[in-house]
Length: 612
Image (cartoon, rainbow, N blue to C red; front, side, top):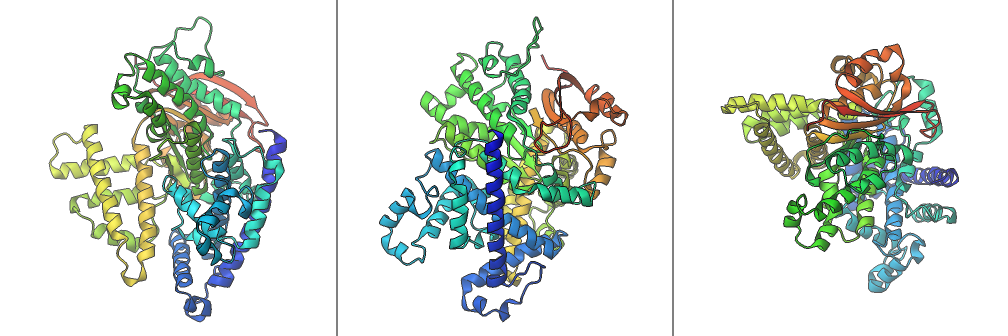
């Protein structure tokens, strides 16, 4: 995507954000009595809320969401600001996603011409009586139904049960938003995989980043850590790193792979002795981006994995297991996208907006590859902090059965403390494993250090927690039912986050944050990462190597300072050169990461010794 097109996307996103946020603020105050300064008008004093039970329920749920943030340490004024921003971002992404689904033939034309779109006209003809009862002819209801259908496979973005969906853009706002999205200058972007990534990049204005940097040299909270580091990775850098990690991994397993031709950036030195690597079923290859943003690395990895699956299935020996599970080749090809999303690709981020975008882009990638492909799971998770309501945590743990698992659940809550600012740098899995060993010892297990036993114990505990959470949210006494639901959602997301940290990966690829951590994260990094604490990107490299299988590959684009500044000597000597083997380094210099004022390097390291 060239610079001129990106500039048009930037202008569209900025204008759309302004229009949506202004409308959302007005609705929050006018309909729900919630002001920008965080003040909340008593519901009993508002005639509109007393007269409309649905509006009253929505107000209670929005208020619960704001107070849920407050319980986690966010001032109410900031919680309102976040709610406005997240609601605007959600509706922009939903409409953009529907536009992209149109371009791929996944749905009928629905937003490209607004209410004049062919799909909506067909809906009106089929539901003439119902549509006539709506002031807008039923267009809002039609869009809501499209979201509900999409939520069946893509819940993170399209789930309308969340409070952000209680505010729908008013007709004039929706019309202006659709006009901006459907500008003829943007006509060519909706079929491109990277479009949503650029929307995510530009949603935070450049002025907001500059203001934050002027006010504080270090990010002051998780939100600032996220938007200060929203720099889209250029396609050639993504290909360079993935070709020389995932592509190289498969090449070492299969010298005759056609990835040799596909991976144009794979470095193969004349006369080199290629290490042989034990072959794997493609379903056992795991790729992680621990700071995934909009998922650019995962999108390109999808392309290579699709080839890897096809090659394996065609191999008389290596493809036996796949052919046993999928006797018919057409069934297998239909299943490939779902297999890749379920077994191979994993992403973590501290920004829920990034998680929504990454999950959506991977879903659209899968549907573009094979429209009829079933998609059951997308392994992109938000690093959720421990839920803020201490009384709900205590209430849940006290009522949890079996009681012998309570210490493990309590340790999981403790392990999630700081997740919102540390993300995948949080070594939560070590705390969980310690709690599991202690619980197994109490149960009389003879071999508590054997990994399969620990894995089975955690799977049992996690299953019981999820079942207990579902029962817990049904409790509605004391008017706290919706808070319990928010609490349960955070806990379940936290469990998925821990799952991703507890499994090893064959490939870790990333464009991690750089610079100073937040004040709350700084102490943790100083204690847990003494060798790399001076810059967040150095910590991510150390952590990435920890998450790899022996012989796995790490690929990263970071500041180049680590390779020559004396303050990074321990990082070079104790991490890059001791824990790994640097295989490739490209000194890229300045001007690579859009507006980031940093000189970069892209490099690949092999974790320990390759297992022959």
